[in-house]
Structures are given as structure tokens and as C-alpha cells.
Image (cartoon, rainbow, N blue to C red; front, side, top):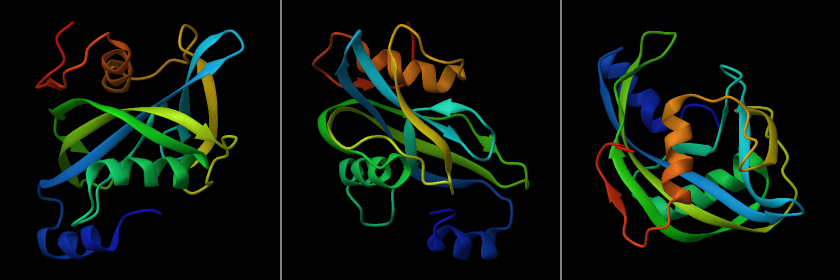
Length: 162
């Protein structure tokens, strides 16, 4: 699904002004033949590889949004293991001039079933990568994977500090 209808309605009123949204990131892990792997998708809008991420719909629970996004964008079923990180992103300015900022909920997830397949709307490719051989990606998404892989039981709050 491209831009949700509720955002289009808000944009009709706000124009390109800053829009505050709730987002989720699902870092999906599984045991591969050569060790742990994580699910990544290649975005159709910019060609970058990222974990599955998306916008939380109004009234939707963040963990359910993460699981929905995994099914929609990568075609696999996952289960939530824990909420790994809650943080506020920097302001993002899209190519059309729209500005957004997110409170992001990053979840550590476990693969349950299904082989990755892109939706060809938001994702051009979907596949598992060994965690020690990830493709190049921006620091924002790389830090989300690092936080999920940390040996912590508590949720990290606030900005990423190594």
C-alpha cells in the first residue's frame, strides 16, 4: 500500500508542512544455514535495502502494524519477540517536499513461515541476508538492526548511542 488515505487527507489540509506520524520497524531474524539471518527489503522509491518498516494506522497497535507490514511488504509471517527500541527520527523531507517526523517502534521479530517475496509496490526485492554480510544501507536502518542484535532485555529509549 502506498500512502495511506488518512495521510492524503491530512496533506490536503497541511500541504508540505511537518507531519508527526507513528512508525514501526520489524527486524525479522531466522537461523540460516550459515548462521543468523535478517530479512531486508529493497525499496522501490530509492533502491535502498532496509528492514521492513511502515506507518502505524490510526488506532492500530504498533506490534500488529509491524506484523502487517512484514506480510504486506515481504510476504512472510513473523512473530514479535520484543520491543527493542523507541526513538524519534530526524525530520524527513521527501522528493515532493512533504516533511515528516516519526516516533519509531523497532521490534525484534522471529521468522515463522513463508519465503520472502516483494510486493512490487513498495518493495522491489525481499530476502534474508546473513547478519555478517548485509548490503550497504543508511545509518538509520543499520542502527535499528544493531539495537535488535544487542544482548538486552529492556527496551532502548531515545537516540542511538553506541
